Length: 177
Image 1: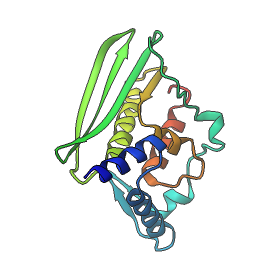
Image 2: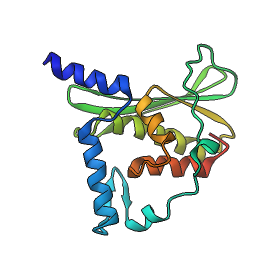
Image 3: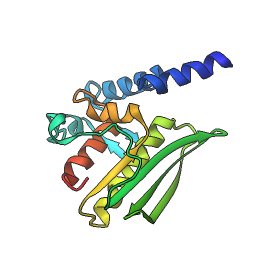
């Protein structure tokens, strides 16, 4: 039991997704690219055309910049805090929109019980971006504590469909986020 806990902690500390998640994404990529099969992730369906026509987000360092420093006191404007978690075999994600230090909106979602914390963190960021777009917020900073998600978003070679979806949403909303 202790050994499993240490392995899980190691994944978090190194920012490297678990091997099962890596293998699953590689299998999904294989199905998309070589078998020309569509795959479903959450409420989105991806096809080979989506993979070939990836959004214009390269080079990632020009548009996708993530500040890894923790800011104790937020500046003025919109800050959206996201988080995902798994407790008692239940998975969920949440986001809180703060404007000028006052809570303006919050959202809590339950995910499929088989989902990982990694997917919950991704879903929370997706919900935050969609909130910015649907509410015509001009400029917002999204704050996430998931180092592995931030590293995946910074990696221009990451072809994981949910990561591509987030990159596409960010590219479509740039420079608002």
